Length: 219
Image 1 (cartoon, rainbow, N blue to C red):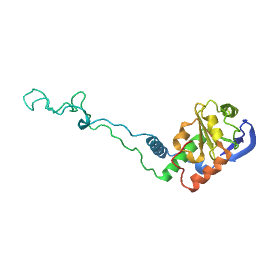
Image 2 (image 1 turned 120 degrees about the vertical axis):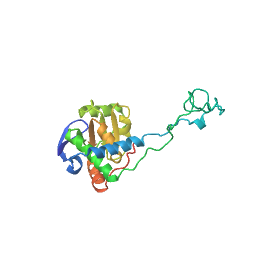
Image 3 (image 1 turned 90 degrees about the horizontal axis):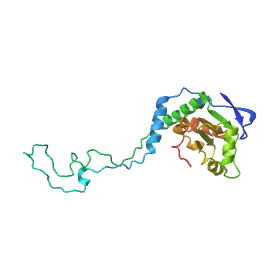
Image 4 (image 1 turned 180 degrees about the horizontal axis):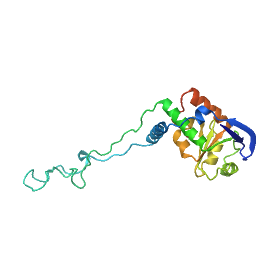
């Protein structure tokens, strides 16, 4: 699949770039996508939830009724889970939601997500660019020139660029990441993915020869 290469003014450079069919043209694997997104979302959870059991409730431990003859259920102290204000049975405890996912599965998920975007013509390639200073209006102008300002945007750079990141930080629906931080969730969440030209060769190297990307460390 070939796509046109544009500059940040939205002008067609007259050049075309061929997307790697092994990354942008595979049959998407929905289950791999599900597993990768599930792991990403699980890793975002703090896991600090906690409720008190009866032994942790601040209250008297005196038995509040006789064992038999009261006409009701047996009960112990005021901290009993069957009473209002008592402890909770099998309540949540702090835990880590992380789980391991095979690198090849993660790579397959990323390829599947990118293939979906390619199928929907939601991949734009722009010449490598930078801004002289962090200016939101420069980034907004670029999105308008590329006719993607009305979409949720994911911009993929070959390496970190502070000026570009700061320029996009206050733009609603815009996300800037390096190629090493690319992940399935961000790709699927975006309406259109804009690649800096040299990022495409980097993604070929990472996905085709190293088996996968990292866990998605962002700015």
